[in-house]
Length: 196
Image 1 (tube, rainbow, N blue to C red):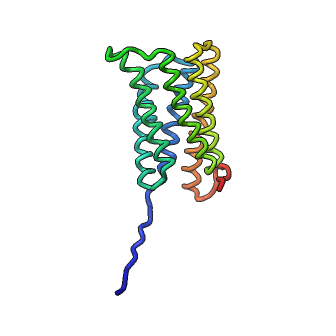
Image 2 (image 1 turned 90 degrees about the horizontal axis):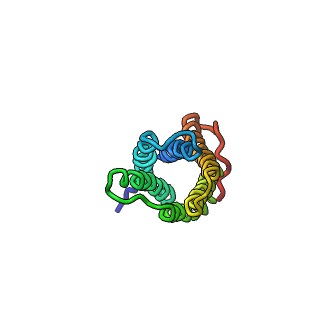
Image 3 (image 1 turned 90 degrees about the vertical axis):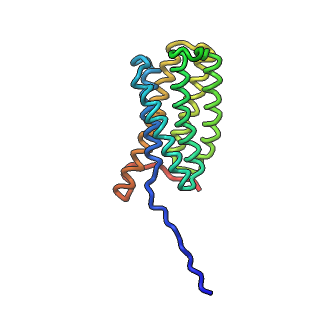
């Protein structure tokens, strides 16, 4: 009896740039606030809900469909990070909960730092650009946690904001590099060598 083998080829687009840009642009805007350039307002909260939150969750689901466990976990988790952060900030304003104190916020941020540190280990199998994104994000979460737990000075918190801007810019670069490299079919913006 003859058997026919059908192979399916994934022709869907790479969702990583969407996730990286959603994360990176939202991170830059929040950390410009942390650096003291402007107050935390609706612009950052809206970016946190829609681009940092919803867009990353969509990218994570798309990565899941492609069978990419690392990217699915990263984008979906950080998408929900942004939604949870906005919720932490908005619930007290709506009178639905008390505001998280510095200890609670420090614990929240340190937990995300631990998660990110483990995810960083996974990036050692990926491009250098992705390693820099996750490495700088690990540092950012722990600096933010320390800032809350130690009730650090305004200067420390502003410096942490600039580290966050760097982290966000590395994610923007990584996302745009993937878009341009794919579009041109060659390396326009290098991502660094992937380790095997």
